[in-house]
Image (tube, rainbow, N blue to C red; front, side):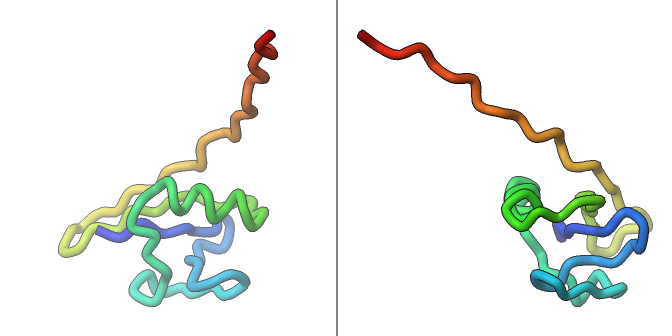
Length: 78
């Protein structure tokens, strides 16, 4: 199984920052969905989704990136 970032409109996959490919075999494998999410957020990538490519399977799955959450400020300790 490969965890990839895919552009929603073009269907291209991230190879590296600013480098895209149509071939999922050439795409960067993030190996974990949180790594893909962090990469997209850290580099300001928009309109991307997580693509899960299964080896030897007839289907793949795509998931939108979860909404960014903001940290809730903690009250100051006195």
